[in-house]
Amino acid sequence: MMHNETHATPYSHLGRLYNLTRTVLLIFVAGGLLFVVPAFAQSAESPSTKTGRILGTVADISDDPVPDAAVVLQGPVGNRLAAVTKEDGSFAFPNVTPGTVYQVTVTAEGFAEWTSSITVEPAQEKTLADIKLRLLAVQRAVTVSYSSTEVAVQQLKAEEQQRIFRFIPNPYVVYEPHPEPLTTKMKFELAYEDFTHPAFFGRVAAWAGVQQANGTPDYRQGAKGYGERFGAGLADATTEGLFGNAILPSLLHQDPRYFYQGTGTKKSRARHAILAAFVCKGDNGASQPNYSTWGGSLIASSISTTYYPNSNRGPGHVFRTFGVGMSLHVVSSLAQEFILDKFTSKGKH
Image 1 (cartoon, one colour):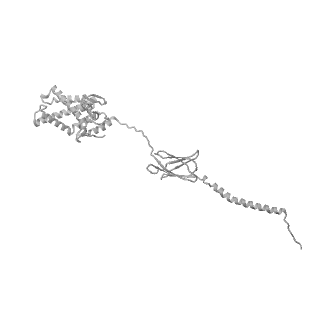
Image 2: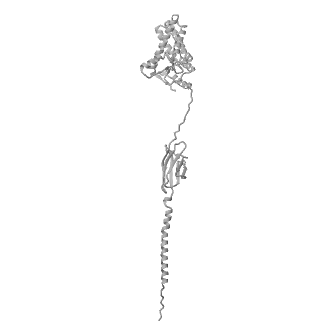
Image 3: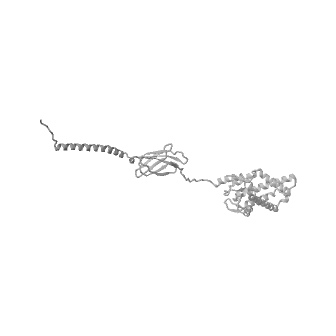
């Protein structure tokens, strides 16, 4: 009986070994690819390459939205982003390079510039809060052109509203610390206002009563004598007021008003009031002899000799009347400085 035996050669064993090694290597490579490719893909999409996002809302200090405001992100050279706020003041930058320091600038018409800095991380959404724009402080140089006459008109209107006990006019007293000079028209206007007010006739009537009691001038007593004294007093006051407060001040450029001091010691105020009958302020603001008051009193005294009784005429009468008139001016100024101010309602201009 014969047996057929096959004997393996050394080359056949080497072939099988080669095939086995190749198969193992292929399996190893294939398995490695299963791990490496996903890892590479994941690395390619790593957050380190994802952009960030910046949001925000621009408002004013009253929390009202500011539309159409310009928002700029300024990074390194060539890295600049810009946006404009919507009606609700909002804005957004969807693609911001992560890790970059941006300078944020917000500007809007009428508002001061707002600045800050910001950096986002990869895939981070960051909101810029508290963007409050303040109104821009604008300094404007305004040139106001006006004349001293216009100011004087306003001051005169205020003086014409001055009332003692809310009834008696007191327009010839200046409480304004920086008064403007009066024009000729204003001086006559003040005199007219004084002559036509009932208080003027009341003063004349009261003075006629004093004269009636003293028996001066030498008119008779009784109602007829009082009427004569009232008529003479009315002529005296009108003449003195017209010349002393309007005509002479206009010709001599002097101010007929009393300038209230109101501050300082009583002695200095009294001195100021007493001297007012003898020293006045010129239209140029300088102090000068009060020729207007002196002249008004002398002219009125001189004219009165034409209608006073014969016994009250002559130079003696003129100078006595002048002296009485000047004394009354001093008393009036003292009253204005220390008493009447408390009872005078001041006008406003």
